[in-house]
Length: 189
Image (cartoon, rainbow, N blue to C red; front, side, top):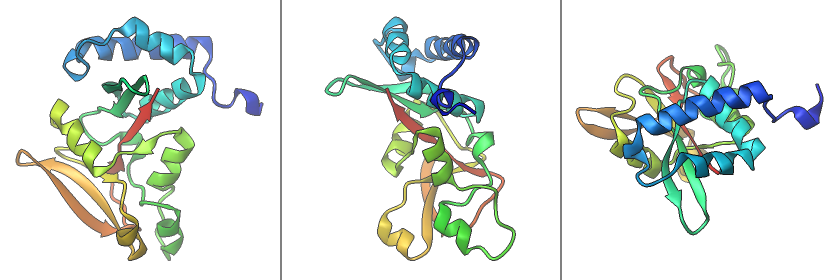
């Protein structure tokens, strides 16, 4: 494979992604008041690697959409807005150290490795709570969130879900993985 083309989309892929993102953007204006799609698309067209990352978010089931705009940095903020944790990112433990510590029944991947490969960041607890202001997400699933180093050093990791009208933050061994737990990402463009 030609490495120079590794993180670029074909014209057809770009057009398809723009169509999906524009439709989602227009359908969910409550997430991004006063923003204009044409400006968003122009910014994306100028950032092909980030467009590739958005496509990765899309193909793994994340349904990325804009949830904010940083005026100081002139950046659009995308989060995974799928109703449940993205299907293509479930059944993963937290990070490589956790994966390597498992003696048997290892998952195929880790949340942190997948996020890095996709060029995105796993949501923080604060970002996860902010996402819930745009809807009710993870009512049946849960999502790993960035874990403070002191918790991670002791073998734990944090995840969140939304139940009974509230965001709950839980802990688990970082090496655990479940079919209903994945991760949500963020991307700034």
